[in-house]
Length: 151
Image (cartoon, rainbow, N blue to C red; front, top):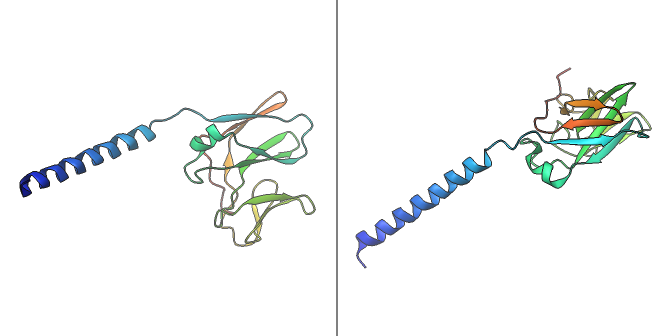
């Protein structure tokens, strides 16, 4: 086999791989529509954690890739939904009922029930998701998380 033929085959293979990558990237970039979950709030405590179904988690957010939980907090009639990832380094966030704070399990950063930072190295509030209340359900729009504010 001549060197020209071998070079031609390598160039053709590289072009095909490049074309496949471009097609794959454009398919992944197609908007999949809003990702929402509805959470039945009847009988829930003021703060609770809810799993995101796997099919929704893949398209819920670019920042965290695969969020595993939504932290839902109620203050009177106001509901808020937060990511369970710290704004410090992305560590898991849990609710500590003993001091009414969200707590970063690694860096000890803390946020209040409204997602505002109150202690530790977190540079801003918890990322949050828009919510709509419909009867006993809170509908959480996972399609575009909003960055927590700087306080």
